[in-house]
Image (cartoon, rainbow, N blue to C red; front, side):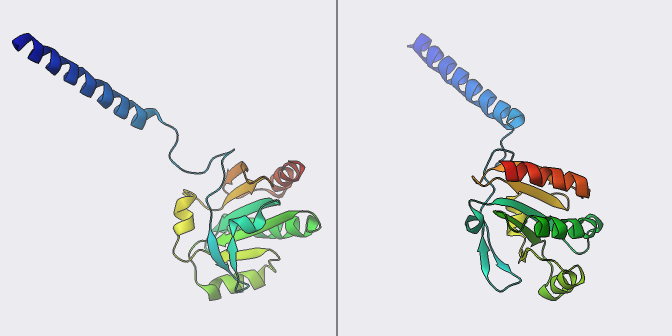
Length: 175
């Protein structure tokens, strides 16, 4: 009886040891944290646009899509806005959209910025920053390039030079 108890204790101990090792190893070495990556689908959103309409990610299915997270307080965002305006004008006759998602600023501030830079693409308001968390943003601007099939082709963190933006958008339109 005593040897059976020892064997059962040993089996339980080894089981706990294996499960614990697996859990620790998975936590330390797993690269999947639920955030969007190249090849994955971007998280869904439903945000109010400056046009007064609710915009959803699904509204852009079948189009090459550039999702740009920005703020008026962000120098890099201000720098790349004219280039995004030019890219949208350049490709407006193609199945292509640019969506700017503002990071928690009030409508008046965003409206003044849109007028100042003559923004010609959809601007959405992320007033409670829930979309920001879903996308795992840590730095601004951050831009997602989404293929017509709905998967992420590229993610760029920081301000883009015009030539770099043009290259990425041309590649996106060819996908």
